[in-house]
Length: 142
Image 1 (tube, helix red, strand yellow):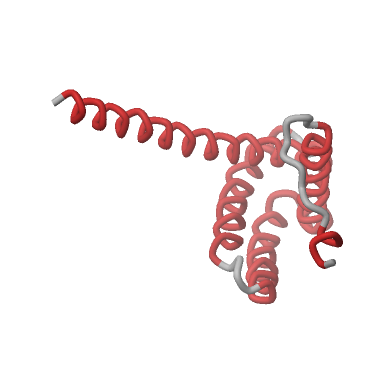
Image 2: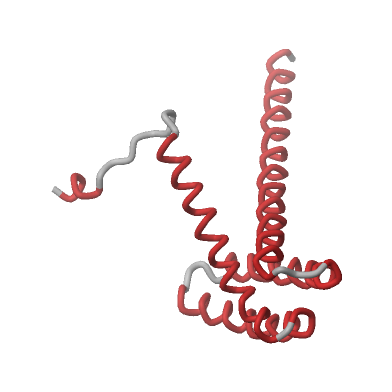
């Protein structure tokens, strides 16, 4: 009986940790999404009225963009095509809110933000003393 209780409690504890990790990952995605939205709004110098109209459209675009990446990860060409189609569709919606010139700039600012995030992530990984050592690919080929 004690063994059964021990096993059940062990299963319960591990399942709780798994649910907590899923929530943390989703929360991190929302933080990045919000930071990206804020970054783009600052770069486009949006007025308060424009920002209020822009935010819901951008959040919808962001969700579709993330889903497109997930759905088409295996085929890079199809992924590129789907992203271009998505951008064309949302460019017209952005144009109605912020004008022609700035609607085209949204995607450039998005890419700049992604580059910044990647650089920060790479720098943190390089400066982390606890990270496992990676093998040099050249040494593996010898």
